[in-house]
Length: 284
Length: 284
Image 1 (cartoon, helix red, strand yellow):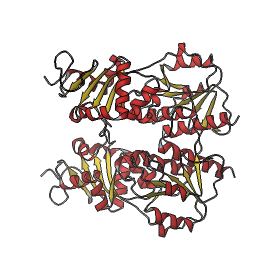
Image 2 (image 1 turned 120 degrees about the vertical axis):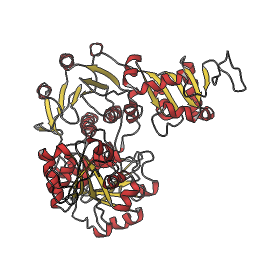
Image 3 (image 1 turned 90 degrees about the horizontal axis):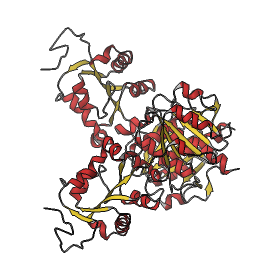
Image 4 (image 1 turned 60 degrees about the vertical axis):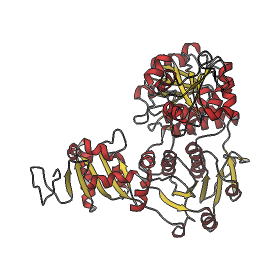
C-alpha cells in the first residue's frame, strides 16, 4: 500500500485529517481527478479541474471551495501551497499530497505549477436572473474554442460585465483550456446555458439593448450608444451569428477593417465590443 | 515502390511533371515536410508549414509560392485544390499527392482540410526599412505563445498596420500554431527580428511615437493621440515590458479595468491598442 491515511499508516509525516499521501498514479482518487479532463465526466459529476497555484488562489479568493486539492509534496512548505491546503481543508475538502510523477498524471499542462484542484461547476438559469440593473452580459452562440471562451470571460471580468449566456452548442467554459485562458475569471463571471428562444424571451423582459456583432452589420460599433443593460451577442468562429439571431438584435454593428484580413478572432471582436461599451459607460 | 514518377511508373493516373503520388508515410519527401514542425528544422531550412486549403489560398493570393504542396488525392478534383496545385506548379514547386494516412503524418491539426504546404519564410532587417511614412508597426517583446502572436498579426492586418518587430526572444510566427492563429495574415504582415538596442536606434530615425502598453502606464490609452508612424510596444505575457524598455517609450499607457481581472490577454491588449490607434486615424 502506497497510501497513508491516519487510520492505517501513521508515519513520520504529519498526519492530518483530510490529508492523504498518494504515491501511485493508479490510485482510485487520482484516477477520479484525472477523469475530469473528459467532458462527460465533468457533466455527470458537475465538477471541473483548475491547474496551478495562481488560478487556484483566484478560486479561493472568489469564494469557490476546492473539493480535492492534488498538491505536489514540496508545495506544502510553499506559502501559497500552504494557504491552498488550509483553505481546502477548512471548506471540508480533501488534500492529496503527491509526487511529480503522480501530478503529471492528473495535469494536462506541461508545467502544472504544483497543484491541481477539483471544484464544483456553478450554473445559473435565466429565469432566476434579473438583469435590469446590470451593466452588461455577453451572449455567445456556439463558440467552439475554449481558449476563445476563456479569453472572453477574462475581458468580461476586466470591464465589470456580469457574465456569459452560452447559447446553443458552446464549448465548455470548465474545460482545462477554458479555465486556463480565463486566468481565474471563470470564478468571477456568472454562467448560464440557454436555448436561443428562451434567451430571447427573457431578454425582452430586461430592457436595455441586444447588440449583435456581425460582418453584415450596417453600423460602425463606435457610432451607436449602449444603454444599460447591454446584451452583447457574438456568433461562432466560422459562421458568425445565424441570420434569424441577427434579426432578433436591436442593433447589428460592424467593427471596421481596412487591411487585408477579412475577419477578427472572436475573442478579439468580443473584447473590442466590450471595451467600446465600457468606455462609453465609464465616460458618462 | 509505392511512389509513382513519370520515369519509373507511368500509370492510369495522369502523370505530370512536378507531381508525385506517394503512398508511404516513410517516404523521404514526406519526412522532410514533417520535420518542419520542429523549430530547428524551420530555422535551418528557412521554410515553414501552412495547413488547410483556406490558409494556403491566402498565401498564394498574397504572392507567396508553395514550394511543396502535400495534397490529399480527392482534393485534386476540388476547385480550390486544383487551383492550389496549379499555383504550386506554376511557381516551380512540387506537388505530392497522398492518401489520408500520409497526410495525417505531416499535418498536426486533427482536421488538416486536405492540404499542407511548405513555404519560404520572409524576414526583413530593420536597416532596410524606412517607416517614416507608415501608419503603424507593432513591436513585441518576448511573446511566448504563438497563438497570441498569430492573433496579433491578424489584428495588425485588419487595421492596416505594416508588420511586427519581434524583440529579444519571441516565439516563432512561422510555427504551425502561429500561422493558424494568424488566419493567413502572416503572409501579409512584414516581419523583423531585432535586439532592443538596434530597434531603439532605428526607431529614433523614423519619427512618430513609441507607445508602450503597461499596467504601470499613467495615461489612459484613449487620452493620448497617436501621430504616424506609431510604434506600439507590447511585452511578454507574464512579465510585461522590462522597466528599461518602458523608460525608452515616449508614452506609457494603461488600458483601464474595473472588474476583478488584474490583466488582459496580450493579444486582447494589443488589439485594443491597435484599434484605438486605427480609430483615431480613420476619424481624421
